[in-house]
Amino acid sequence: MILSAGGIRRQVSATSEKQPDTTTGDSDGQEAANSDGHTRVTVLVALAANLVIAVAKAVGGIFAGSPALLSEAAHSVADSLNEVFLLAALSRSRRPPDARHPFGYGKERFFWSLLAAVGIFVMGGCFSFFQGFEAIRNGSEEKFSGYIAGLIVLGVAFVAEGISLIRAVRQAHRQGEGVGDVQDPALRTVLAEDGTAVLGVTFAAIGMVLHMLTGQAVWEGCASILIGALLVYVAYRLGRDARDQLIGEAADPELTGRIRELLRAQPEIDSVEALFTMKTGVDSALVAARIDLVPGMDSEEVEEVAVRIKRSVAEMFPEAGQIFLDVTDRDHTGHDHTDRAVRDAHESPAATGERGGA
Image (tube, rainbow, N blue to C red; front, side):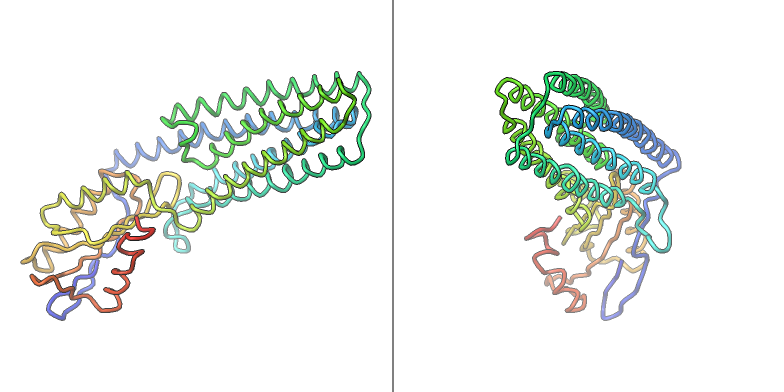
């Protein structure tokens, strides 16, 4: 917090690490640990299912000569690698802040989720497109026993992927979130992968059945291309979300609005000039506010008020991991006494929230 008055600038405490009472902090930490534990089990279930299914699909695809089944095998291999990425994200993102990373390692989850999206695109989508175009161009012949083996493998895969998907959906509901509103990128990736896998197995089975009935490999080729398009779309959505979070996405608008209302309700605050938030993890955010205090307060009072306000924000909003207050002293004419460079920066569209602000 920077106080500017009568041409004299005094630097006081600028930041506040979230320091609620011990009971609240322990409760929040235990809740986060429990959530991570449930997510880790969900990821491990998905990993086990994908490893078994990948081997079964690969063997069945080679035996049956099925391009759609081989595409699904590539899909399962990509999902298995992605689960390894997600396990790394879960273990690394909860490391405490240090001198090199003072805001913690919460964004590790977003980084590993981005790698998972790239894996889905390259290993799953691109290989599926290749198999589909090869089948359409060259065709393929399968024996009746090959069709049966392939369909059995797809049936087992559908059951395994469905079980993993049901567990992920239940966890999302247990956390009080809808399937489309999941905030944890690890759980969101598992939901996307399992949902895509169930659809992909369905497409592969339809393509194989049509191939068996018509003798035309083009049906399995089209199924492979459709699987590839589905994987590319899912990879794009996951990658876009991870990119937004990595480059500094604002916290939930509802949370931002509630923090603004809390600040405005403080009797010592005359106005909230600007409020910025940024996600620093799955359940943590940085909060920075530029506030104008009521006239007549000396520097000691300002410091005490700032500490109390930051404590109030931290206690009411556990997500606020770091809180910054910049006090702007204005006279009765409304002129700002802060430096011109600072004032220009604060009055920019991004700072005032006119465009892209919190």
